[in-house]
Length: 356
Figure: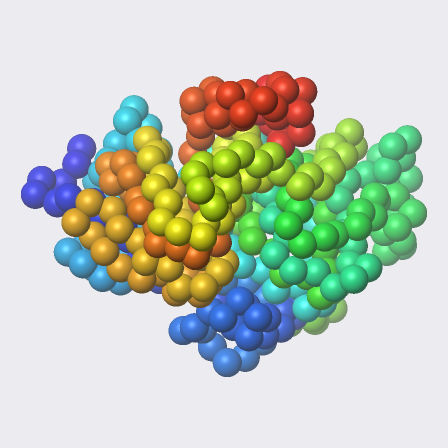
């Protein structure tokens, strides 16, 4: 039930900075994000409701309220009509893979419930913001590789023998279902959107928190659980997205879509309006931009994020703008209909992730 007397508005949330061993300084120095520590940062969790790391509102009447509290008190107004849940279902991050991430996977929903005691798994998507020439990612098991061969190669740390190595290019996106082994970096800057979860199983002999060695017993236990969660058939591909025009000098690119989340990148030379019926996570990947929604008006700085509750219904951005909208989609209304109207086929739309 909603708390009385409170009207939701665009929400600025606290950000968690993660000092993992593969990080660098690109989030601050290349994206221009302010307000984060001046040490090596691997990830900034922009919109998080992970248990123990739930974002907290930093301005306005709801200052001090956690995202978890807002979901409980204002489910329909925040998420969208008829929607509710135990937590906010989207997690978004900037990731600086100055070094290579550990090879790992996240359970899908079924494995998370069966093996991890969690309500959901973690399907994710990576949108590449920048990558050095020749940058690559590991994503998915090579066709024909058996479980036994995969386990033996992971044990030997011979990842290229069994995992697909894909070229990485700025502007492309890949939808990574739960159960898919993966890694990216070095020299890669990513915006990631995913299900709200922090479950993962690693195939490395070192810890990503500090680089310390993992004991043989722990390493074997990690591989055992990873092998129970892996999906050998998952082989996703990078895509440039699907573009439509939304006005003079404005373009909307659908980057990925599934029942879990969708992600779009909007660029505009002038003002642009975006109407919506479910919550939007708005992240700025360009110059500072002014955002107006109802009687709320504020600047969104470089690499900053706003959570737009569903009840806001519309936002206007001044141009020039280069922003990402992550959201809870109605696939027919929000994805298929505009893309079909623009002339894209259902077969092409299906390349965005799990649309059909």
